[in-house]
Image 1 (cartoon, rainbow, N blue to C red):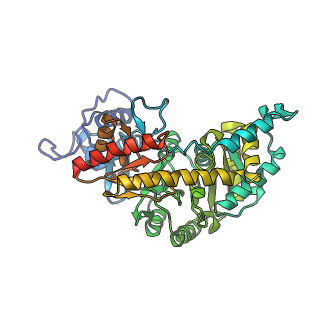
Image 2: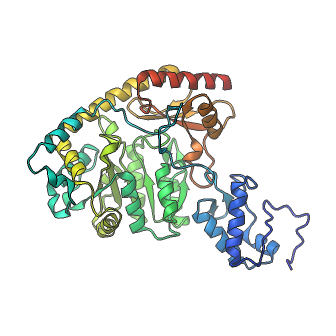
Image 3: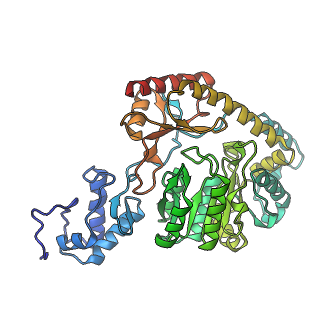
Length: 462
């Protein structure tokens, strides 16, 4: 029997467990998951200490610890040394942002899509390739030894983004998400921990959950990852590395200062932490800042995805990898992909080497600036963070409405936006904010229509 009497004892969770179901720790984990999903335990709830719960259920402490660990690896719980274990704020959020089909009867302002008005150079380049007499080679497997000039193109694009590297560090991936999955799969084991901003790209969350890697939230200052908080995590949270989006951070649209880039790089070198630098948005800057990788090339896996700078349909990313990580990440990419599409790799390389990619980037930037001017006009009375060359903005909400409530309200009135709850990490408290995708509407007219609806909703809240 339990040592203490719990009849009138305050506990945030008093589960009733059928001890005939073995193993018991799985029964506890299952009950905990159901109580979270059914709203019995709300996000942010602090769970009883493990010893207290073990005493209440008359079980070994190790049984409770294993149950909590199962739920922590699923992203349902978040534990921090000295503070306890909490139901994660993102336990119930949907991190899969790109729907199978375009939302019906909704103006799409959720998914971070670039404009589609600048693809003509790709079309012309593709037509030229398919008219060549040996066009059939684009439809076979590519071999690493045959792709040296393609790597030269990668070097040129990465240099344009603020980082100098060499061909012997370059790997190819089927997009940034694919590169991220291969990196985590090769450098982390189930149960390992990595750090990220307290609001981060949902693709990291889904990959980490699939691989049972725990994401530790690292606090921000002035909308940038705090170097002091990163160093604290290195000392106290047993992390192996961090994930960063230095330019146009997704979802908050902030850009990291050069000073912070240097500080983060120095801390990574001091504690031998790897950094996954997501450079998806680097080229949105007319004059990109130096990459974090420029200050710590032996620590940083630099991922230059083409999805937002050129075209999502290319499904290609160039990965600059430190020598010590190259073999495991290369093997992971092979096991995931065998190879990338020769057709798309050749198309991307020709577009880069011919400098046509500069035209595409310039048109993207021009279209994005035009759309952001419209956003600035409609949402001038509200805090809508981000710059005129970013393809999304971070809208801080007035009043007391949460991001999740505003997302549902906007959808009810015909506009899809994404709430902070979708991006929050662990037990970090989500901002009262939504991400607004500027280029997702197909036309300026559709964008204006969506903004009119959002402005009306915001006005009703003030």
